[in-house]
Length: 311
Length: 181
Image 1 (cartoon, one colour):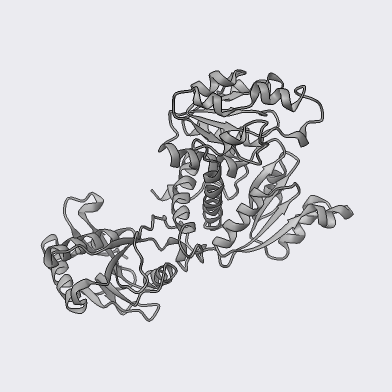
Image 2 (cartoon, one colour):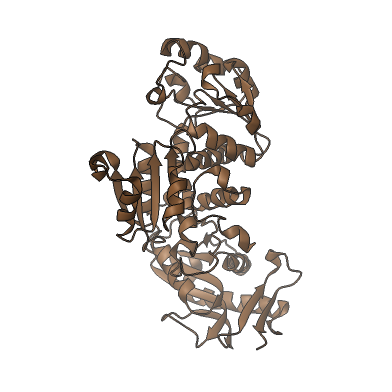
């Protein structure tokens, strides 16, 4: 029993690197934190002697605020660092930047970077706990954990459920982390989108591939709809946003014709009218805002479990 | 290893009944009183006490569960982190007389954490503490119990082991364990 009370790693670099027991422990601990953040006084003193640096080399609203709120709810001291107004502009290397921050006695680092593998690189070079808040098109582990937590809260369990990820799979770290997590937890996973936005060999991860939105909606219990990432597309993967919306967008009429319960998720930010219409995003099927709430609980659980490891 | 029985199943039932009668003396009519058990084993005892009080008083007393993992003062100082449990107090504690319940009072640190966790949920008018076993002369903080099942003299090397039916044991037994040198 004791082995299940501690994560197997001192970092959270990606879902691929953690065990099924780790995922269950994080989801279980998040339940307790969800109760905490719904109290009249939403704060516990647990991380009162822990200092955390949020280092964001890439824009973020939701994830950064969610991490910061999770840290504040746990009474940690936090510093926020955005690369756009820092010495990175003056030519400082990544490792120098991080070592300078750590020299000020920082215990944990939450990092987002546009290059794949940056959190893994840092974990080998520095002694602080590293949490990956998104590395390029690779992984976004806390998003996958909060998605799993949201499915678990809504449907009771994940094992045996059918989850389809719609949209831009090629550029999506959310998709990859979700696939790893859902497969580890025993779900059936499918990806659905235009063939240009589905990476080659993705079936080797044990997922099904489809290009038919209506048929996939019929198949799945949960539709996790991803954003079209305009900022990562140097070339055109589809003719126009209008055409994408026409062939791959999800609208209310489609959901009404299903004749079954379905859960709609979206990691945000939503391009309303592109991947999903407004009436779908705001419908009773949607748990998009629950995902945001659960995000804080999941990040509190991750911070708590990583900090509780005696190094 | 030596194992000495300090409270048997029969004695436990008698002790719980006695503790309930003591609590009743101090809580006139139980109009504003609530019971809160500390996770994990205090919760089982709180439920037993709540059930006994219902038998004796003919009315049910609100009973909640409090987890203190996030308020502990030994976070990052333990080899193995403590397991966290759910806190479930589905009623207001503001202005209420709270009876905190736990199985063993040893250093007093758990109770200190519980007091911190409790006041973050509201301001009770009074907080009392009930424990089944009081390990005397071993406090790290100035905390004492209001209701005590049994006082025992123990050494720091000894351990009090509480086995309750709710945990899957056949009988309720509370042991004092002495490890061999």
